[in-house]
Length: 273
Image 1 (cartoon, rainbow, N blue to C red):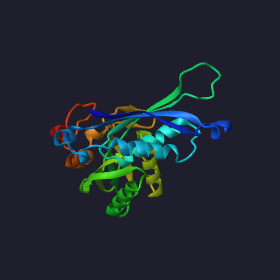
Image 2 (cartoon, rainbow, N blue to C red; image 1 turned 180 degrees about the vertical axis):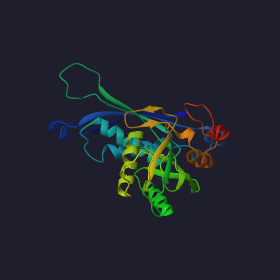
Image 3 (tube, one colour; image 1 turned 30 degrees about the horizontal axis):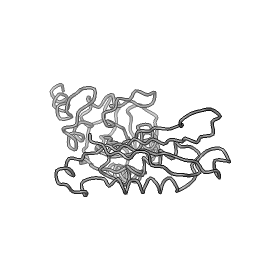
Image 4 (cartoon, rainbow, N blue to C red; image 1 turned 30 degrees about the vertical axis):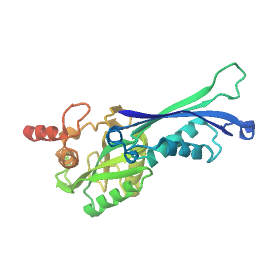
């Protein structure tokens, strides 16, 4: 991945926790490193295919003076968020905020925060087998589309599927979504659980009937093993109701653990049935 750098922008401002930092101005030094592809801009010699670092510098300045931040962590977060939202060609950004006049009674060069943020691609599975199934999926998709800094980029067709497990219940209607989001996996999980709750999901029987079921299947190429979240989804390779719609929208996506295309995982599953 190519990179665009802006090094050591200097501003004088009033960011800090202590009261005196709110009125005694201090120096701040900000640098950004933006990952993108410069190939088309370089070949065509056309700024329309690149990101104008002058505009980025102006936006950094606007964020800097937009409010008095208590923490340089918050300042860095807002700069990264602004760049990723406004400049679609930027895939990832590193922001460094230095504070050379920090209130420390020691000799030092500066204190600093460095963060790395990305435009993430995630794949979700959605399903329902209670009530108006099509309406339930549409409501879930609508709710997901309203999440902050999240965009649905692909939606599979709705597929009727048999329920998973040995519980007697009605067939499901399932689909998969591709989304881009600035959320972390845990933040996205929290938002999806909230949508399930709003739409009336209850958790009484494992793999039982449900108004709506929202699962994170894949998130970039991350492997996550948290107490409440596993990515890739542990059972996705065993479930045709996941692989069929996922293969429709992302057949050439590679499973980060299996190291196989989704299309290959689908073929392997049907061979084993």
